Image 1: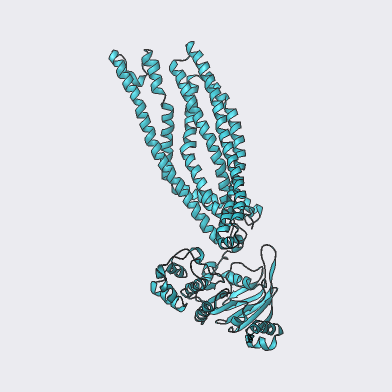
Image 2: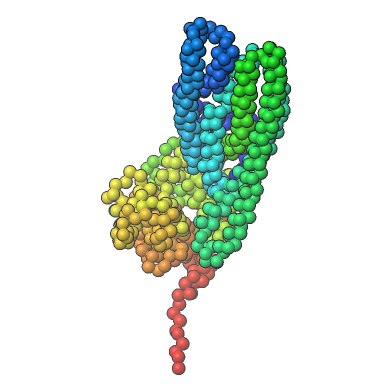
Length: 620
C-alpha cells in the first residue's frame, strides 16, 4: 500500500491554485469565528501580562534612585515626598508592596489567559478531528484501499494534537512575548538610545539562527511524522493479523521488523530534539554576550552621570526579560515547524475530494422495487486494470441472480458498482429505470443490504451490532430479526444475552454466529436489494445449514445478487450469469445451463463428483 502522502488532491493544479482557502483553512477560520469572545478575553489577558512584565523592575528602580539616593519621587508618588525619616520607611513599604500587586495582576491574567487559550485549543483539535473523521468516511473505497490505516490514525490524533499545542503556545507565548518585546524596546530607547543599539545589534544574529533552525527542524519533523505513521501502520497490521503471527511463531520476526522501523523514528526524534536544543543554546550565548555589553557600557555611563543606577538596573532587568521571550520564541519556532508539517498533513486529507459525489439534482432513493440494469458498462480500477468490458444484463425486481466465475472475473466489482462504491467509466447502471448516479449516494445505499464473506462486527454489544442496520430499532425489532436469522437461541445462551460484548471485528464468537448476526442486522433494515458475497464460505456444516435457512427467509420477495463459487448455492437462483475476464460468457436458469452449456455442466460435474458414494476397503 502507498502512504497517503503520495496521494494528490483531485482536480487540476490550476483548479487547486484557484481555491481561495483549503478545507483546513475553512475549518480553522470557522472555529475562530465561533470563539471571538474567548479570543478577546485571551488578548486582553495577554496585554495585561505584557504590561506587568514591563512594570515589574520599576518599583526597585524607584527605591534605588529616589529613596536610597534621596531624590524626589516621580509625580505620581509625590504624596510621599517631604516626609520625615519614618516617611522614607513608609515609602519603601508602599513601593515594595506594589511588587506583590503586580504579581497578583500577572497571576490572575495568566490564569485566565491559560484557561481561555487552552479551551480554544482543545476545541480547535476537536473540530479538526471531527472534520477529518467525517471526511475520511466520505472518501471512496479506492482511497482507503491504497492508504495505510496507521498513517490516517496518526493524522487524526497526533497531528491535530500538535496543532492544539502550538495554538495554545501562540496564545500563551507568541502574542504576549511580542508585546513585551515592543514595550521594552520603546522604554529602552526612551532611557538611552545608544545603549539600546547594543541590544539591537544582536537581533540580526538571532533572526538568522532562528530562520536556519526553523527550516532544519521543519524538515526533520516531516521525516519524524512519516516514520511515526509507518510504525502505527505496522502495529495495526500485526495486531489485526495476530492469529497468523502466532500460528507461524513469527513474534520474534515481527519484533525485529518493528525494532527496525522504530529505530528510524528514534533517530528522527533525537535529531529533532538536538536541533531544538541547539536553537535554545544559541540564544543563550547571544544573551550572555548582550548582557555583558549592556552592563559594561551602562555602568560606565552611570559612573559618568549619564545614567542612574536604577536605569542600569532597568536595562539589565530588561535584558534578562528580553532574551527570555526571544529564547521562548526560538523554542516556539521549533513547535511551529512541527505544526506546519501537521497542518500540511491534515490539509492534504481535507483537500482530497471524494471520487463518488452526488450529481446536481440527485433524488432520494426511496421505496425501490429492485430492478437493476447494466447498460454497456466498462470499468477499470485506478491502477488501470480493466475489470469489466461492455457489460450488459437486466435483473427484474424480486429475481434471484447468481454470479459465477473465476477469481478476478469481475463479480465483486459488479456489487461495488451497484452500491456506488465506484462509478463506471462508460455505460450506465439503472436502478428502477434511473441512473444510479442520479440518486443521492447515502439514500441509495440505505436501500441495499450487503452480507460479506467475512462479516464485520463492531466491538460493542450484540444488540448494538444488530441495531446498526436501523439505529432507532426497538428491542422487539432486534429480537424478531434475530429469530428470523436463526441467531436468537445462541444469543440467549451467552452469559449476557443481547448485552454480550463481542470483540473487535466479532473475534470472540464463531464465524457462523458472526454471519447470523450480520444477517439479523440486514433483516432489521428491510431493504429491497440484497448483495450476498460468498456468505457461506468457511462455515462448518451445522452453521451452513442455519445460515442458508436464514438467507432463504431474508431473500424472500427481494432482488438478490449472489456472488459465489458454489454451484450448489447457484442451483436455487432464478438466473445464473457466468463471467470470465469481465464479460458474461453464459447466462440462463440453472436447469437450462445444465442442458445447454458445456462449460457449466463440466463445472457442475466436477463439483458434485466429490460426493459420489465410494465403498471403503474391508480389512481382512
